[in-house]
Structures are given as structure tokens and as C-alpha cells.
Image 1 (cartoon, rainbow, N blue to C red):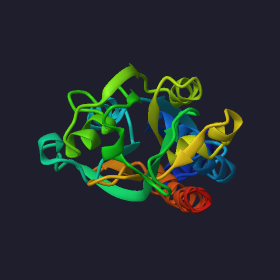
Image 2: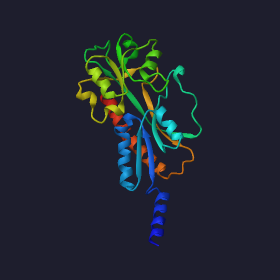
Image 3: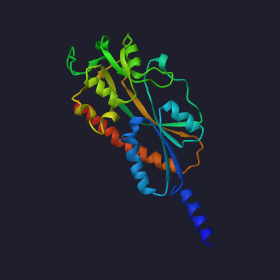
Image 4: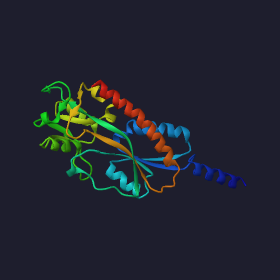
Length: 248
């Protein structure tokens, strides 16, 4: 009778989302604040849930979502980009929900003297060196896309997906870099290295859309719970990015 009662309790907890397992994927800078804030509240409300957390780029996480290895993936996409770099249509088995638009900021080397006050125009940087990201799968990186819209290919001295490395290179006068807001918020990395941040004027916005990707028909009741917490966390992170934009 005791085993039957225990089984009944466990079944009830699984059905209501009080227990069970959640498999969550996320990209690196989402793991600095957006995802941890959501998980903090999620764990407090559901201490019996088992978590499996996987970090990766969107092109790595989406196949794992389709193969049922993940229940939820926090990904990003460049909502406005040159047509030559746009992705084909999405998979009907996936559901995407926009969380927030994340601005990118231009990290300016100490020796650079702008041609004018205010935001830096990307056209003025045609002869300048860059620290760029690797790009996603077969897609060009954001710096390559934005420079292409200004009619030139960037002089890339280094490619890295680690923004701490990019900021270190900028502080050493190696080149310019585009840094997403979420990578600057937690520890004010740019300020600690004495780097000046600027807004960048481009034909296409220098930012990305942060999204929740889920699989249609997933019966796991924990999906709705973590999605609700991610929405709440996105509001907080969005407000901090807005404060950072105002301060520049």
C-alpha cells in the first residue's frame, strides 16, 4: 500500500510539473543572466525537478530539440539582415516565441578618434580592423553582414565567440568589436577594461532577437513553467539593456 501511495504521488507530481526532468539548451551569453535568473525562480518553485542544461549555438541546439534531447532551447536570430544571408523557412515542428530584442554596442579601441560626435557610422570604419565572431554554421557573422551593407568587407584580425576575449583585444587596440548587451550587463566588462562603448549607425540594425524554441506536441508540463520564467527574466534583462543604451 505504501508503494502504491508513493507511485500515486509521483504520478501526480509528474503530471502537474512538480517533479520530472527538464532539458534546457541555451547559447553562451544567455547563460550569464537571462537563463540563470529564470532557473533561480524555477528551482525554488520546483525543487524536485531534475535539470539537464546544455550550452551551444542555435544551429547546434535546434537539431537536439527536434530529436527530443531538449525540451526548450533559448536561441537567437538576426531579425533584419541582407537577403543574401537570410535563412530558409523554419521547421513546422518547431515553435518560436520572441523574448526580447538585444542591442549590440560598438567597443571602441582607446586610440580611435571618431570623425564626428555621437554614434559611429559603420561607413567610417571601412579601413579599421575588427574582432568578429565565428558566424553560425554556414552563415556570415554579424560584422561581415553589416559591413557588406556599407559596401566593404571588414579587415578581421581575429574571430572569437568569447566576448571577454573580444573586449581584451579591443582594450589592446587590436580592433573594433560588436558586443551584445547581455554580455556587458553582468559585470560591466567594458568599464573594467576602460573601453568606450558607442552606438553604431548601420543600414540594418546591429542587434539580434532572443527567442524561445519549443517542439510542437511536447507533453512535458515543465515546458510551460520554464517558458513563463524566461519571459519574466527577459523583461528584467531588457530593462537593463535599455539603461545601458541610455547611459551611452
